[in-house]
Length: 215
Image (cartoon, rainbow, N blue to C red; front, side, top):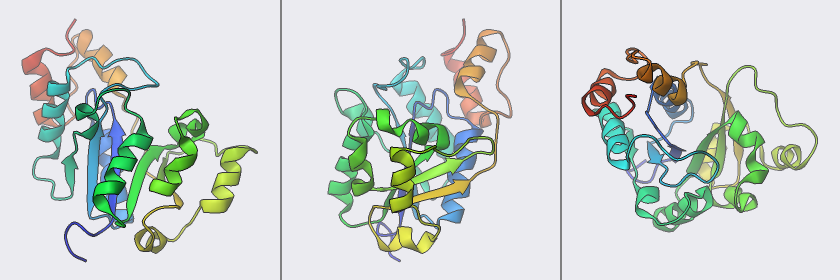
């Protein structure tokens, strides 16, 4: 398997800030799915949530610091460089153009998967990439409806199926549950509590130096 040809996955999000919940999920899926790379894609203009608190520059600094020395993880700025809302379908379309027939997966949480019909052009996502659903204990699966039908048509439990096809499958994998949220971290910092052991020390140092969440 040559470098640049093995299975690739993307993990998108605000990363405001990046924390160990993000990193642990990426690590476990990298190991379980035998991924060559995981791209961390920070959103620029999230269509389904409030605007970011930290600037794009600071969020990039925190991501770069968190991934330093990680051979399989890197940051992709495609959404920061693109104007308009950070629609996942556009990000996957761009990656598909550059990656050809390479196996491409998009990592999402079960909560995001359950809201998939609200995403822009969501029916096209499986034509562009595999969907890897990071399942945390306690999240119910979809009830009867379009998502249940989608799972029946596309779900696989075979990791190799993700490698041999460029897109089209849905793979659900239970990951370690870490009750960490970026919003709770920001609220704690505003109250004077630094997020040691919730984020890498290098990220904590950037938060402290920049004061991006203070007050």
